[in-house]
Length: 85
Image (cartoon, rainbow, N blue to C red):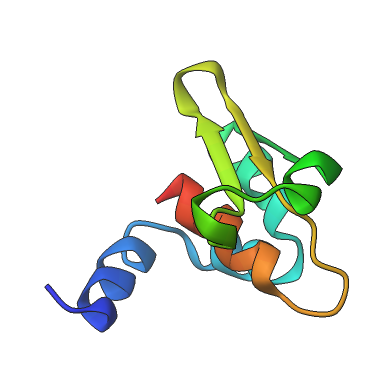
């Protein structure tokens, strides 16, 4: 499956209002839609793993997700979506 197929598959499982909520507030949406608390972690921003490529970690069984905040981009939105996915 390619990326477009994967995105279509995921979005096909979500209600339209959930998609719009995620677009406006990714961290709030994962809590409202999936019951997963997404927390910005300054520690991740200071010391990213995997040579700087790791921006998040999730403990989905515990309903927790941590991500490195990004002030001047939407990279954190991708990280939140990636961790939930």
